[in-house]
Length: 106
Image 1 (cartoon, one colour):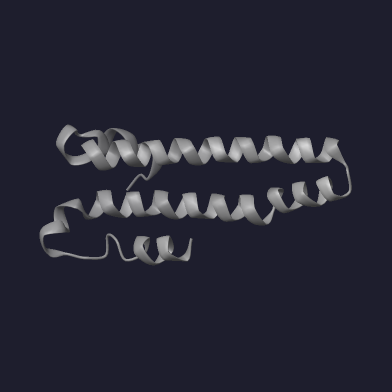
Image 2 (tube, rainbow, N blue to C red; image 1 turned 120 degrees about the vertical axis):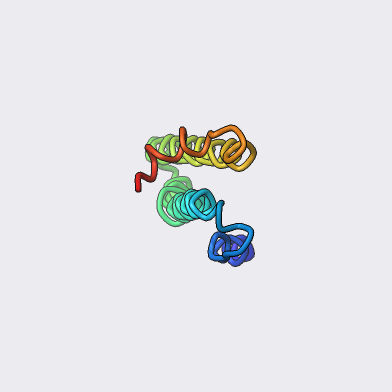
């Protein structure tokens, strides 16, 4: 996990040839950071509570936490798919403006 953060954070900070893509790179970086935050929230909040509920044999509470984890993972998957679509066809097909403008207005 730490290696991914080390690679992700410097992206979008450069200039030169990538200057035309700075907005797209900044938005993709923001999506990546949001995905990291969702993952960390899953790990430190509902997953830990689910684990404790399973240890105490409180299966109803564990099921509630599992449902919460599923929703957050679905959100993270959706953000990942948006990231992939924009990264592949962002500048060439104009998808960056269509998808990212409502998410990150400037």
